[in-house]
Amino acid sequence: MAAFPYPSGIPLETEKDVKAFIRQLDDAGRRLRDAGIGFLYHNHNMEFRRIGGALILDMIFNSIDPRVLGAELDTYWVQAGGNDPARWCAKLKGRLPILHMKDFGVQDKYEGVPLSVFKEIGRGNLDWPGIIAAAEKAGCTQFIVEQDSNWIEGDPFKSLKASFDFITEKLCG
Image 1 (cartoon, rainbow, N blue to C red):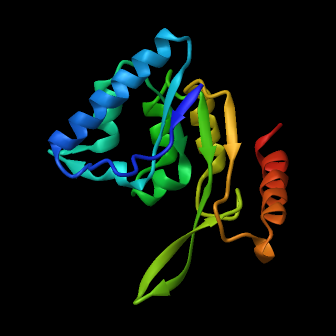
Image 2: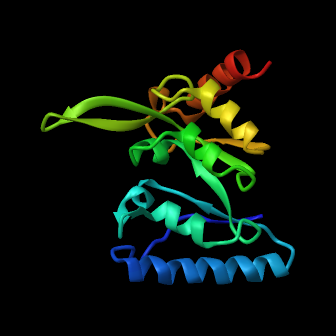
């Protein structure tokens, strides 16, 4: 399985830009499929902008055959983009083998605007039981836990343990 991690240096400002990017993803996905390798798209919040009346992420997944492109949905970035991770899991039914679990928190303010931060699973604002249920119903079989920053006492292993403890106590069973 291969995942497209981030469209660095790829303009996504116009409908023409997005369509050109979709053609590149489709071509890469077809080549990988022909070689027996699955291809996934990993989202961020930028794909939740509207261009031509549609969300970029909808344009991507509505334009490419599910046999060519699947999803590695990132829950933090879905929320940061103003969307519901559980709803997106449902939308991606049949093409969501991997869920990228990151919790979303709000702390501090900058010029009166709340700042979002990465949080340990279960310590943020996301509805994990609902997200996991929707992901499993969509066919998800792999769950990746990640926290980019904002670790407990600056230690990523303490944050990983807190996420692990929440998952095993509240989500497994």
